[in-house]
Image (cartoon, rainbow, N blue to C red):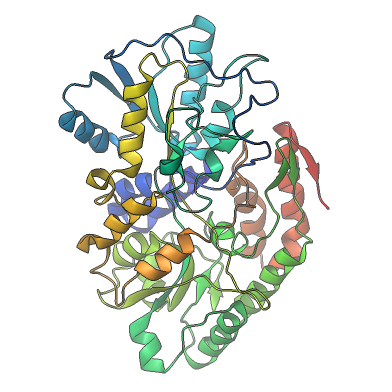
Amino acid sequence: MRSSGSPRTTLRRRAVQAAAGVLAAAVATVLTGCASADTNSGSGKAASGHAAFTPVKQKPGSQITVWADSTRLPAVQAYQKSHPDVKMKIVTYDGGADGSTYLQTKVQLFDRTGSGWPDVVFGTPTDVTWASAPTKPGAVPFAAPLDENLVPASTLNNFAKGSLTPCQFNGHTYCLRNDIAQVVLWYNKTLMDRWGYKVPTTWPEYEALGEKVAKEHPGYLVGSVGDTNSQESYFWSSQCPAFDLVKPNTLRVALKDPNCTRMSTLLDKLISAKAVTTQGFFSQGFAKDSGSKVLMANGPSWYGQYLFKSAFHTPAKQMAAAAPLTWPGESTASTGNVGGGVWMVSSHSTNLKASTDLATWLTTSDANQAAAPTYPAYGPAATAWLANPANRDYFATDVSGPFRQAADEVWTGWSNTKFSDATAWSSVVLPALTAGKSLTATLPAWQSAISNEAKADGYQVTNQ
């Protein structure tokens, strides 16, 4: 999720905690940054305004300082235990949660004083938007370009397709993705089989089944648009250009695009039929009142464990996952992403070897990722994660196929920006839905809100 660390994460975390207090620790892991970033220039060249990366004088064997949030702390400690020769100072901080700018503020201070930078930090894709840019012309960004003789191309190429896009700016890769939250179609197999329903493979089939469910089983639901991240599950999956960085400083916000209106029209029909609710899955009281009546949900891979199992208490062997839905005329699906954090290595580190080894181990090693709470972005580690009984035994069918497919189908046109994509949705769209307005009628106001945020953060905006 361009999530934890931006306002988006704050809202998500609070929503999950409202749904079930037992999720508090899990949410810090699940909702930690997502979305994608612009990649416009070729790698191997100094970007405009950037000095070519030259490491500071290295001191092999020197102590490295690691900043991690409480959720990632055990992983860092596990590395320290298994690598006793590496000198480490571990600092626990908020990891960018709740929209915190603590890391950025401290880095700006360190830039002024010329010392104090951590060597390795856990953060969010939103953090990468400033950490990959120089503080002044000719300066180096805080984050080191990992593709410049630090992390082998063979390693970078093994991450899920597009999962490193949030790390890539001006032709270089400034972070390693910890986890992703690819959107799949969740469904209650027990109820689907009992009622003789076929799992949809296309959005028109999903719409038709939703209308059928509303008539034959009133009160049962095929989705929700009431959470602060619902737009990522639906509009991102429709390739709606709501957050499309066409240039590093130019954002396309074009909600009149057919890829936006096809989704809003579909959802408006299902909302009208009461098959899709405008109440959030994570809103107060939903789990108790309606959790058992969610037949389907288009949502992230972590829904299985953290929504259906922990919040809704759906019995084991009922829930299953299907691959992302396609639109007519499309042979390959595009899907959204609702989570995932990153690890960055500081360009100021005097021990880049140890720092890079740590960041690489945290994101790629089976020893760490096989037992991770959420789906690893690194392909081989994801295979180990899927083989872990703790990540598969709860489900009615094997989720490996849908998860793997969706991991490579996340659309990279929903870009990572300096501001959260949750703010406008939460402040403009959700109140409008609560007031009974349609999604389609609300698109112009949503577009204006996004555009205004973008301009306030220095972007040029195009609505075409």
